[in-house]
Length: 301
Image 1 (tube, rainbow, N blue to C red):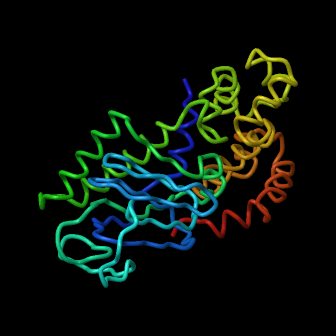
Image 2 (tube, rainbow, N blue to C red):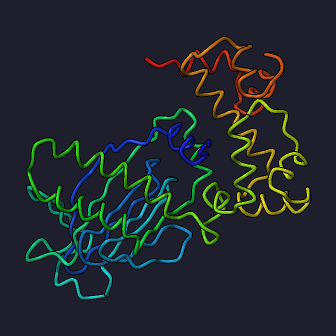
């Protein structure tokens, strides 16, 4: 059976680019303006407060994992207000094995692993739009086990340490995204897949993107009336069924063009268009440039 979530993650090609151990003591504050890079944070011990631009603050505790797939500014601080004791909360001290925020002296109140990762997909912005703006996971046994392994690996200087950390973080990323599935998840692919009726229709779109799907046909796959399916899909996914189908076809097309897997007519047929000209018109309207030009500009070096 086709797994739409796995297909999206495969196309995203996530990889870790920066990993560092950080700690905080006393009054401390970290501010990040929009940087364009997805951010993650695993709380190894202690607690803190995280405020993402435009969202309510959340308290982070030991074992928590936070993932921000889209570039948003945020502020992270110590949990309780306290006097700075003459130390600027924005003070950063580089130690041999970690970066200290706040008071450089004495034991830390929190220790965490933070960093950035990248999506290798040329269509990352489109695919990320299908994911939640923020993922905060707590109390998940599997995730807690991964964070524990991460903490142990980070504290030791074992052979292939950096390689193991990178692989653990990539698994953490996927596990964290998967853990957000459910009716309470923000609008997006994971929420849609948590709805059994909608999941049936989403799987069919992924199984056969060449099919000339209509809302009525997809509604039958979901065993819903046309109007009920359309409204339910839009609420759960944040976009209409046809918008999602078009987005997925264009994501597939970009991947095929970049990898030069077939001629224009073959690629058109593989993503649901009966002719290269019809595909070219749709692609140009959606992407902003013709598929032939896109293929030249995105050719792997």
